[in-house]
Length: 507
Image (cartoon, rainbow, N blue to C red; front, side, top):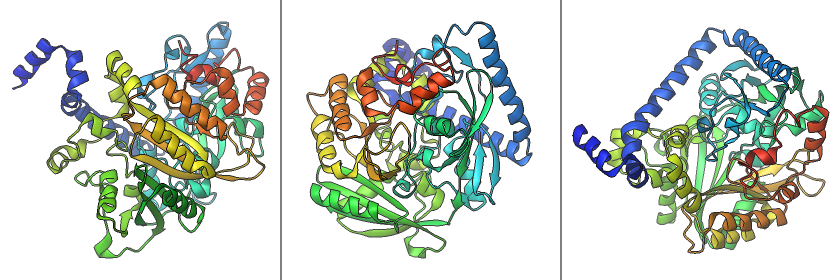
């Protein structure tokens, strides 16, 4: 059988198989490799934390980064610096080519350093990921107030970019639960910043995408965890009703979690949840088990049945409810992935690592995805949710849409409300194949970007950004960022954030 498969690949060509029958390659190679990756990193993190060796190694690793930066400076600092982490290892689908032309600084820092329950903070290194953090914190009765969805999202990516979860209507974005950052700057010095100490740097770091310094540690707030999430599913029909219900539930601080999955312009399920230590036995659902239906399909069942329901979900299962299906992206890679037979036989290996999918996609698939696939998160004021959903419907027509509310504090960050007060926003996430005939990646995304700028919204920077430089700085407030760039001599050391992430600037 294997011989016949290899002959078929030879006849058809590897690129043909990867493009047209990608599920074969994913199931035979990427799923087993992903399991090996997960086991290795889990065991490594567990051993290091149990042996309490991480803090000692951390100081040495910081000194090594400082040494590399000073060597770069001694050599004349002719090229910009960036982290030496390969681009394919990041969760972002964007392929950054700057790694080949910049000075790569090796940063091997993926440990949880300390959990301080008295101060209610956890201190972590930048490459520690959300899967690691939840596994440890939940086991000792704590959790992060905002715990972004996918296991592989790293603390560094969430600090330097951003992160969101269904609790963000109370706590804000990921950076708003951070209390301290430690960075190695362009001159090789180590600096700690908080709201009171080096406060300008503290507020300028989020959304800077590693262009002010190298993050080596972050302190993040933690809160007591409960065993279960009591989750209420409520189908809603009609766009006006959807927007009204979602806004009301998002403004209700008694809801610890609020999320919407919109399956068409006029059909959605709004979910609200609270943490609890007690569950009704006949209503428990361990949705994270490998053989369970994908969460978005499970939720869709309540819409089809048109019934309100309540379930009790284990906390960690809830946090990673979209992980197994990578929201709904996996249905395009393994079309039969939610089939019960596949789930029971192969579900324990799902999902494939996003990093491995990127590594093996090749230029052909990358271009195809760019032209025929959308992965975007647009953050818009809640008061504009209806017009935003209509714009998504007309310009790209991708469903489901992910609706996640968050409060945006009035702080001197690159993203802040237009007025002087905190404001409620919504993250509208579109992931999938556009169903509009006139879709063209560049022009369609630019239309969305213009709409978002006009309503004083923001675009998450992990995705493809097509804005011109002037448009980018209309969307984001660069006042503090540019001031710190000059003050810390970053202009010769790191690229500007626009040059690092925008398609019009990348070479």
